Image (cartoon, rainbow, N blue to C red; front, side, top):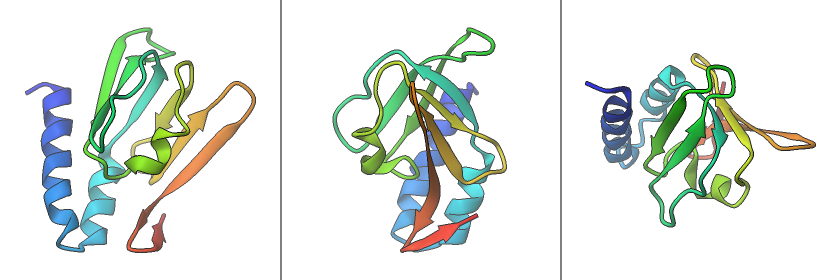
Length: 115
């Protein structure tokens, strides 16, 4: 199974569990994710979207799909073509590297920030 399909499946399961209120489960799922994407395309409109670009280290084309969970809607207005988005495996933070600044966002569920 491709990484894209596996990530999509995990995120769909996660989305279904959001209504369950199991923040620990969600945090553990997002800890497994990792990406390093120099964004080349604007994410599509709507809650679910895919980040598409290249890995700035390997120069490979990469994509990360999100169903509106960790990245959520607040991130969408902050992301622009040319930004580098980084999520390190084992961490619950997303880094948005802009030309002159780095924005860091922790995973938040039901008002609590998870480390």
